[in-house]
Image (cartoon, rainbow over all chains, first blue to last red; front, side, top):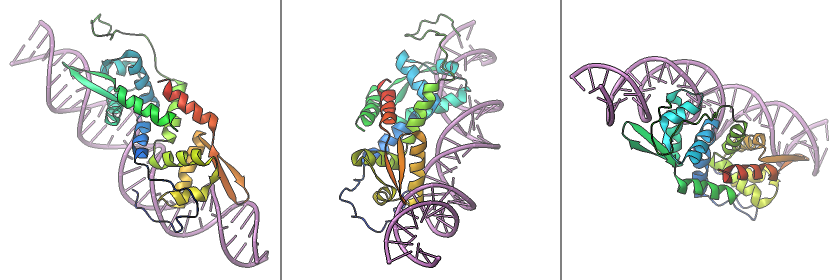
Length: 108
Length: 108
DNA sequence: TTCCTTTATCGTTGATCTGCGATCGATGCT
DNA sequence: AGCATCGATCGCAGATCAACGATAAAGGAA
């Protein structure tokens, strides 16, 4: 990806698009919620403050393994985090990361 | 399930999350900007108010066909719109749709 | 008309996502 | 110890994405 095949003219316009290092982070956060199930998971977690994985599974018409995958994606984006509590895992929102997403969008 | 297990605010709530139309719309908008190139395109268009496709192509290290694909995705999400102006196409932000995305995120 | 420019679309290749069942690891309980 | 439960991971299928080059379609200029 991004083999940087240079185009010909580079200064035909007075404004140049600066290479945004934030674009990648923005895209990553947006990607995390770019699926209806993950939107619902995030909303659910925000409304519940914290809950177990099994509870989330029960709220969605998806298999446990599928929900676990979505949770993994959300966790990798940093939007949520999970704490092992005995045999269970308690998930909750990462407020800092959520705020980051909000600022990215509002500053558009 | 629902075994009166005294967890921290983790009791069973008969709230169903399936078939949430707003979650789908939210996910669609999030998906539109879930790629660094599309983030940059959107930011660029917001800063420029309106510009031609070729101008966007010159700002990105991507082939013209690839950029056209991204523009198509953004157009399908409703986030941007293009007006045919002779042989060129003038793209601009759909403010209503952008506002919709912002409200979705801020209301998280 | 013929040519040039601008943009969209086609066709391909490889990578990634999504969904599921099955299974494994870890923990708690009896 | 043995067993049940919870959650993560594996492996497979099908679908979609991302990138490119090549080409088509549409309008302006010569």
